[in-house]
Length: 422
RNA sequence: GUGGCUGUAGCUCAAUCGGUUAGAGCGCCGGACUGUGGCUCCGGAGGUUGGGGGUUCAAUUCCCCUCAGCCACCCCA
Image (cartoon, rainbow, N blue to C red; front, side, top):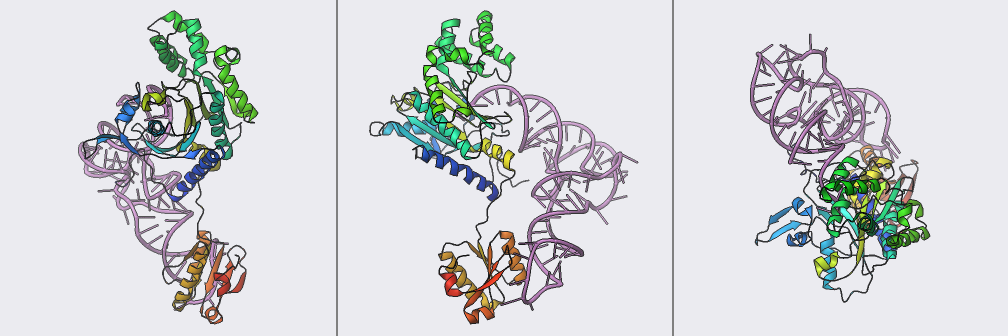
């Protein structure tokens, strides 16, 4: 096929767009219920904005080029740097805590797979300016409520919550893992779920080949899914408060404390969480956490921040697995049909009068047998056909036919243009 | 970026041992049916068999390359 979208990019047909609108609708609805304001930013940014964050592999996956003015630019791979810049501009004027959300289209050049394309829309919700764990609970609660809003229950979707501060304290106190080794060890532990061997190797490498300490860390890794003892540690106080808050909201049934969740990115500083389908057949639905140092690093303003990103791709697949292929609802409510060509002017007048009332109206754009017109009306999903012919015109009426019951009544043209209820 | 599997009509699939004009169902368009739809019947459009090369008298079929999709790595904003 010569005519096809670029790999990882989607042609969005009406059925698919219907599903996207369903997802966006729930995103905006829940964001509103949680008191979040919507913002947006440029899809193209100076590459510098993304390279400023140290330790990011993101740079290697940028859609990056030089614009005609010689600027080094990139399609946005994430929203957070833009958000940081925007917040920094008005940091002193904005009342804290700031609750903002956005639904940017993001781009990354990498090999596509199920649930991962080169372009997607991602809900970003962030609370800025509040370091307390209730802020974490708010964003986790919003993420869970989005899944609830899409009809998923605790047997279908799980929120796994952890806190890097607990792991950092434990690894430091008991295994002497220093700050410079921490990220490597955490990244290693992140692999434990998928492959304990790969995790062991990564951890040992992060600890400069110290096999003894690596073994001790790996012994710990096996127990991270059983949070009991770790939750009792002092460093776990914010996490306990966050989880308790989610329980008080009535969302406790969705939440698992699981210290195996550490998230790949270096900039998380506290609570981290991910949402998964319970069967774990898809990749993560959503991921986020607290990154208190990021805003200062990017925007030069020292404000704590917690948030998450939730993409439309995995979410769409989760819904498709449950509901089957998407169906686009037809906008056509009434189909105006004519008997002969002489009826056209009257039909156009009637169609437009109905449209003025806000009713979705279609009619045949060429001369067609009445049967054909009704066929089209039915396949469009119209609830009613309005037939106008010489007899009706003479009486200043039209035949209103219910396509479901095949019953017909004659209605005056004035009533149809007025307040006739279909 | 690495490895494995798979590519036939818009969709789901067929095509004997490699055999001559690549078929079917659904969908789409038209007709039967110029004042009444979903059913039925008839007809039509739609394919460089993903693309390129090779072997062969002959390739959808066998081989190589390439592109795309899926899966697993890598990574996950």
